[in-house]
Image (cartoon, rainbow, N blue to C red; front, side, top):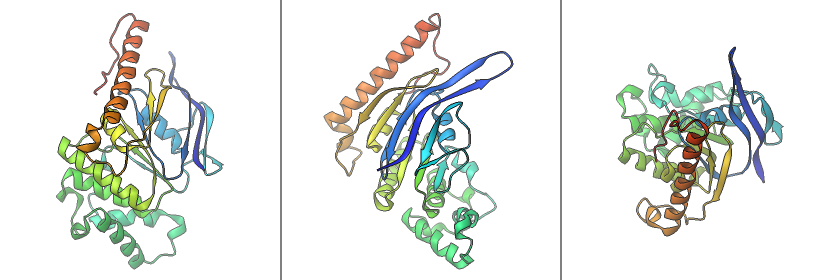
Length: 277
């Protein structure tokens, strides 16, 4: 059953001097409990795509359907996690109160008393391994721990769909690998549907059931890969699997070729932001 339908959406930004198409006729379906990665070079419109799916930005054309209803404002049951986790947490609130914050805002949970908020928050802090840090402030935690608090806050609201915008992009390699495995454990436990945006090919292949590859300027889907790598995933075994290497190399080839094509179409100039593979 399709949870989300993105139907030929385009986004045009209009200024006094020019019209710029950031996204051109992107369409895809997302099933319940599916983990989808969206991969593309920096500046190709991945964040813009998530902003439209979340209802924070209207498409110029096309439509987005979530659970049978058209998305034109932020819909209930959808959570968008940004890359800058440190700024999304409230520094004057302790960890437990940060996780409670989303619950306090949910209309359908206003009947819950404070103690119920706390129990719900503690459940997800335990799931992310941070229950013993519940009375700390965010600035007392490491970057990886802060990101786990942000994920716990999202999970506490029990969303139907989680959108994640390069959530591990600013972390060191070891912490990033740890959080990739942590996210997979959480996804398998709570059965969330996730759309995960990244410019890192290996990360996208490692995490997902399906990979959507975007081209640059204007962004459009150039390839979809059904990822049949066995689960559960393992940083060593999965990344050494011939199928993993096959998918990774093919995506890299596609994006590299599209970067070259962009240069030819623009008098040989390099794209404004290079792809970081």
